Amino acid sequence: MRPNSHRGTIFLEEGEILQRTAYEGEQYLLRLRAPACAKAARPGQFIHLRCQEALPLRRPLSILRAQADWIELLFRAVGRGTRALARQPVGARLSLLGPIGQPFQLPSSEKPVLLIGGGIGIPPLVFAAQILHRRNHGRVFAAFGSEIPFPFAPKPAEFLVSGLPPDVIAAMPLLEDWGIPNRLASQQGYPGCFSGYVTDLARRWLQSLEPTAAAQTEILACGPQPMLAAAADLARAFGCACQVSLEAFMACGVGGCAGCAVDVHTAQGLARKRVCVDGPVFDAHQIF
Image (tube, one colour):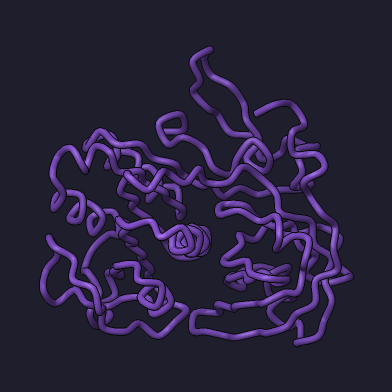
């Protein structure tokens, strides 16, 4: 990335809450009117949102979808900021900066794509699925995992997927509507879900491919750090590329404070990169 290449691409807007939906596990879906951000947003990017006027520090939230003049966010209320955000009513206006960061590099239509999302790491992969659907990308599979109830009502899958147990049929309705085969994983015994780690579900799908196709697969992953490390191991085992979207505590969110820096292994040696603007998407093999 060129120095300061993010300048001029991040917009400051007053986002208006158009829709607010609560789900089990203190999970919330917000739809915000934010035309400039919606127009520029790419899968893997995030916004830095002021959750309440009295809280000066913003919170980074991944973009779930972007369309027309609105964006959607999915978050879990776990701290002071996100709990305040969860109480905001429809019609409230919140200051946001975005879109921020380096997005996923979506592969050409010839390559299979494997989307792996864990918990609140699912949103960037839904956004990637939305763009792949628009491009009519023909070979995509999504594996999503959660240890709390999913923030949607799973439905029986309409698309057959080889290599999976016949009772693994739970799918995300939105991706089904887009024609993208997908399955859900959990260790909580949810009906129709794959029993185990989401990366084990992804491994089953890769094993069902011809070796050449598996090696050409591009993995896109977002979720907890152990899941990302497992996704990198999975990519290494099958010889395929893997991009991961990292999560980090942030202060400024726009590259000024470097408080979110992580170690990245480059051709020139170990380097410190900022998750906010150098990422959040990195080559998995440079991180793990």
